Length: 222
Length: 396
Image (cartoon, rainbow over all chains, first blue to last red; front, side, top):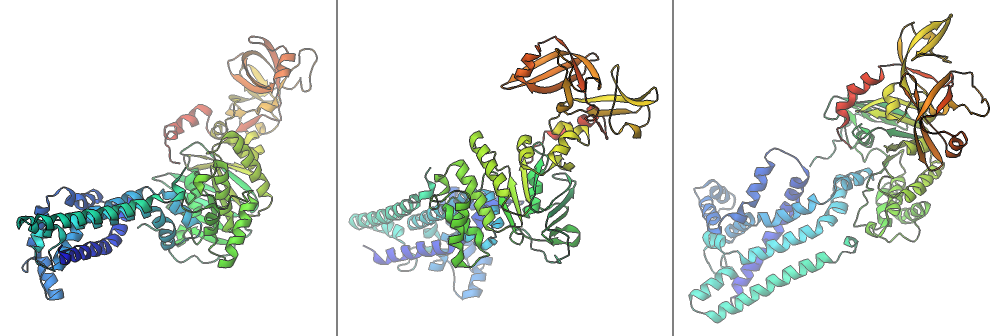
C-alpha cells in the first residue's frame, strides 16, 4: 500500500474542493440568475473538460505551465517556483479539470430556486447577503453537496491530466490512481488490487455520505 | 448579481396623509401610463385583463421593478422618485407582499417563515409575536408544519401572516385567491374583509376577478395596456364608466350609440326610431352629436303584463325576447329592439316565469332616464379596435 500516494490524493482532492466550491457557488449562481452576453460561451468553456480527452487538456496545461509561457512565468514571479511536476501544478490542473463538476450541479440547483423566493426575502426585509445565506444556500445545499462529492471523487480518480502535468514524483505528484498504474506496470498485482479497493471504498463512502445527507430533508416531501 | 440599486437622495418630504401615491410612466418594454392613490385603511383593487400591467405596478410599489419615470410615496415618505434619483430598495420600503403563489420558503416551517420577516424587532420578541400572527390568521397548532405540509388556503394565510409581521405601511396582494378552490376562496375573501377592519394601512389588491374587486374594494382602478383608465368606487364605476372601453373591461353590456336631437324644444337622445329622455349630460352636447351611452341593467324595468308598473311612462321601449339563459335563480334576458340593438339584463327566474317570458314574445321595458350615462371619448367600435392588437400580450 502506497500511503504517500494516498495522502497526496486526499490532499489534492480536499484542496480542490476547498478552492473550487466558493467559485462554483459564485459562478453557478451568476450563470443561473444573470443574463449577459457570452453566457453560452462561458458555459461551453466550463463544460469543455467533460468532453476533452484528459491528455489534451494536460498537454495544453503543460505548455501553459512552462516558464516561458505567460502563466508559468507569472507563477514563477509570484512564488519563485515552477508549476510543471509540482503539487501546485497538479492542484491548478485539477481545479481546471473539475470546473464542470463543481459548477454545473450548483448552477442547476440555483436555477431551481424560484425567483420570487428571492423577491419575497427582499420584501421581508432580508438583505441580499442574508437572502443568500438564509434562503438560497439552504435550498441549493443538495447541489453544493453533490458538487463537492463529484469534485472529490473525480479528483481521486483523475489520471490523464495529472500524469501529463505532474508526472509521478513520489510524495509530490504521484496520486493513488497513478500509483496503481505504476504497480501494474511493475507486475505488482496485489499492491494494485489493494489500492484499487481502497479507492473504490473511499469513492463509494463519499458518494453514499453525500447522497444520504441530501436525502434527509423533511420539507422536500409532499 | 443584479441586486436592486441602492441610490441615495431620498429626502424626507412632507406629504399630507398616510396613504399611497403611485405614478409610473414608460414606453417600453412594458408600456405604462398609470397613476392611482389609496388612502390608509382603504382597499384599492387594480383590475384589468392579463397584460394590463397590474402586477408590474404592484412590483413598482414593492421596489422589485423600476419604470423609466415613476413616483411612489407612502405614509409620508418617498420610496421612488425617478426625477430626483430617489430609489429605495425593497428592504428599505416597509411593504407586506403576498405573492400569487405565496413564495413561502420551503425549507422553513410556518413559524420560521413568519419570523424571518421580523428583522426589525429584537430577537427575543420575534417568536412569541410570530406565533401571535399565525394565531391571527387562525393557524395555531400548525406552526411546525412546512409549506409542503399545508393546504393551499393555509399557505395563503402563512403568506399573509408573514406580510403583516413586517408591520408594513402598505399591504400588496398579487391575485392572492387565484390558486385556491372556490370554497376556500370565498372563506379567504371573507377573512380579508374582516382583517381590513383591523389594519389601517393602504391595501392594494391585484385581481382580474371583477366580482372579487367589487366585493372587497373601496376603490377600483381599471387598467388596460398599462394605462390607468379610471379610478373610483365600484358603484361609480359600474354606473358611470368614463369610456366605452372601461365599460367593456368591466364586462358591462347595454352600450349603444345615439344622436343628440331636439324634439319640441327638449333635448332628446335619438336611439333608432326612439327619442329617449336623459336625466343629465345632454344639454352640454351640441345638436347632432353622436354619443355612446350606457345603461346599467338595474335601470331597465320590465313592464308587467297584468298591471302597469312604476316608471312605465319613462322611455318605454318595445322589444322581442331574443335569448333567455337560466342560471339558477337568475335569468339573463336579451331583448332585441326594432332597430337591432340588444338590451341585456338579469331578472329573478321566478319573475321571468310569472311574466310568461318566452323566446319571440313581445315585451315592453322602460329605460330609466336617471340611469342613462353618456360617455366621453371615442365610439365603441373605434376605441375597442384601436386597442385590441395589444390586448393579447401577456405580461403578468
